Image (cartoon, rainbow over all chains, first blue to last red; front, side, top):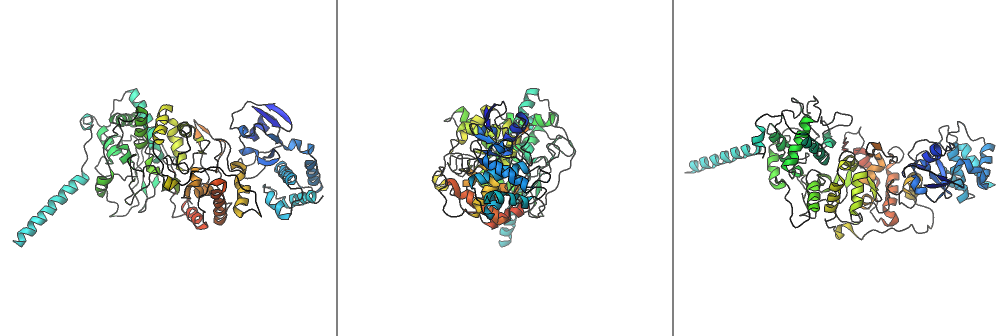
Amino acid sequence: MELRINGMTHQIDVEPETPLLWVIREELGMTGTKYGCGLAQCGACTVMIDGRVARSCVTPVESVAGAEVTTIEAVETDPVGRKVVAAWIDNQVPQCGYCQSGQVMAAVALLKENPSPGESEITEAMVNLCRCATYNAIHAAVRQVAKA
Amino acid sequence: MLKRLIAVFAAAIVVIAAAGAWWATRVPASPFDRASQASPGATEAPEATVARGAYVARQADCVACHTTEGGASFAGGLAMGTPIGAIYTTNITPDRETGIGSYSLAEFDNAVRRGVARDGHRLYPAMPYPSYAKMTDEDVQALYGYFMKRVTPVRQENRASDIPWPLNMRWPLAFWNIPFYDGHPYVADTSRSAQWNRGAYLVQGAGHCGSCHTPRGLAMQERALDQGSAAYLSGALLDGWYAPSLRNDPNTGLGRWSESEIVSYLRTGRNVHGVVFGSMLEAFNNSTQHLSEEDLGAMAHYLKSLPGDPERDGKPWSYQAAPARTGSPSNGEKIYAARCAYCHGVDGRGRGQWISPLAGASSVLSKENASTINITLNGSGRVVQAGTPDSYRMPPLRQLLSDGEIADVLTYVRGAWGNGAPAVTPEDVAKLRRTTNPSSDEVIILQMR
């Protein structure tokens, strides 16, 4: 099947139920998106599908045929994405870093949908897990972009 | 005169009691009585018969109850909860001392189709012998050949039930059988097609679909054993799950499923309407996926012939998109967005046949809410098709969500997208949380292999 990722079209030959995450990492070699729990619980595998936040570990590749998938690799081609990455650096958010590509994608999806989210809206949208508990820094970085 | 009358009366009571005792404890006749006398246990079953027996064992899903998780196949020991105490399934491997290795064909037949063990004691109807009674002589003979020749004998003593005396006496079950057991093998309905009859034979007989899907009466009997009653396969609550209607009910049954969709559900564990879960997952893993396309087609054809009940089922469901929201989302909707929508979709439509839709799903539309609560608390097991586990699984949310939160999110799911099912209360969730917690002393969950 054909798969649109980060503005490029890829021809892939996999079982229709293969998780999108597997295709991104194993077939296409884009390892920025991480595998965490495999159960849509942690958010490490977060990508955007047609601009909306999605968890690629529970997304059968068949269901994204014709959709535009955005991964962390292309985050800085987007103006909101660039701002989020800059805020992440300003706030020195990552510790171990494993969950951070998912966190950044979740933040970008939130800010594209709602450019100036309030405190509670940030808390409700940023639900990805972080083993190092960088939650306060994540919150601060999102707030920085929201205010800007 | 009076003395004589009393004596006659007493004598009559003794005779009736003796006759009753003989009748309730006798070993019934089997068509195999003569064949078996020669050499009990030994069987000269040819390979073709054994292979057919293996297939019949799949149809009957013997392994589901007669095996514990991680235990040897068919060695028994699975606890089955009853209101008066647990009973344990028995060792049906051909071990001569602790299993059925010394059973003759007739004795095996009496257990399978008549519910009577070798020593004459009655089996609890947890063993679905009222259904198995419909199996043909040939299928029972083949099944016997399979167990004797192909199943590995395992030495494992049977465990006595937890039911206290006098409730643990078995002979009264002979009287239970009078109204609730019809010992005749399946009789074909000549006004129907061969396919319909094959389907009816499998669904009512070895498949014993009614054990879960037919509501039970006061004496725990299935309220119907065939299509003669509208209660047959009309949905039932059992062991913390609600087994939905298999009749042509558009909302809570198979009304919106085509025959070929039923076949793919039984063969691959999934279709666009849903994925197997709960006890059906066990039935799929061990039984239905192993049946031939032809047999599954026959079962689907038969099931589609059972009319629905519009009064019970209500107005047929159709998808309704969520109206534009005014004000802030409900608590249930917020939880749905954070916990459920990544897989089941904001629109509730799931992901093709891979992840169940919640919009229009029969288990969501059912008045009974047990299945939705149970799967939310405990997640789903492994759907293993042809040896390969599936990629997507419902995680248990027992630790993540409180009773109130689960009630809120399920109330939202049951009300959204045109579903129109009644709300779920925190008390409903609390009850199932308790009874499906393996460390609780009230546990009812039946963990089949």
